[in-house]
Amino acid sequence: MSEELSKDYRIGDEIGRGRFGVVYRCYSPDSGEIYAVKSIDKSVLADDFDFECAVREAKILRLASAGNPHVVQIHAVYEDEAAIHLVMDLCEGGDLFDRIAACDGAPMMEADAVVVMAALMEALAICHRRGVAHRDVKPDNVLFDGEGRLRLADFGSADCFGDGRPMMGLVGTPYYVAPEVVAGKDYGEKVDVWSAGVVLYIMLGGIPPFYGETATEIFEAVMRGNLRFPTRVFGGVSPLAKDLIRRMLCKDVSRRFSAEQVLRHPWITSGVETRCVADQT
Image 1: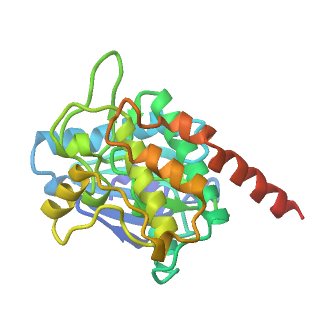
Image 2: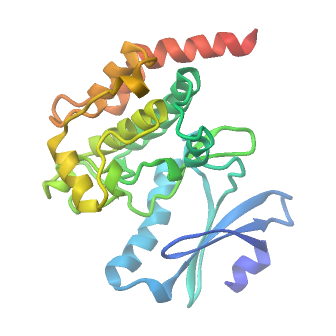
Image 3: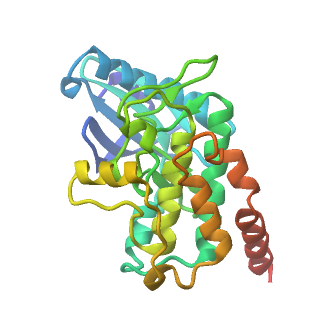
């Protein structure tokens, strides 16, 4: 561990591990606060591009998280010969994948799903206004803090866009990747809306909208874009929810909703209002 990091924080147990590094619990003696530190191992970064992505993650996360209540906040960055260390919020409430899995294949209640989707889309809308696309929206990257607040995490695949500059590259996780990404085209921030639409479909149906046994089969299904709502799993889902999913999983990017439009959709606005009233009674 970096000497400077060790001076400012006490490093605790490992709480997560990914392709490029390890996440540890850490403690600040000065503030008494507990955080998470993501240590990106330089030795596993294959080339200069991977290294630049690791450095860029911290910069993009600072831009995306400032004043954004539903994005994991970054508090400090350290670098030594072995690794880059990002000190971030500790989210001890698990992730959305765990919550979906806990349903044992059953759909999530719409009243719960709408609250999750509203917070996720607020996070993305703020990111998009700042010219940041996450590019890997999926349940594993939707975390919850100790008080149950949603926090979008893992900006390792994120990129900046704007001033007429599109994004490129096959980035993301197969089930959640937008068709324009699969097709190898230039694309914009609405790839995040597509991914969030897949998340919403899975929350309400318990199954992915485009299925395959391999990445190739999944991509082929995504490109066909044959969106269906099987009665056996979507029989009890409201027409408004299905309408929103259709608008998010629209292959025509010009007709696909933006994050801001999703937030204005009646399923979101009426659902959040209903949930807030119920919580107060």
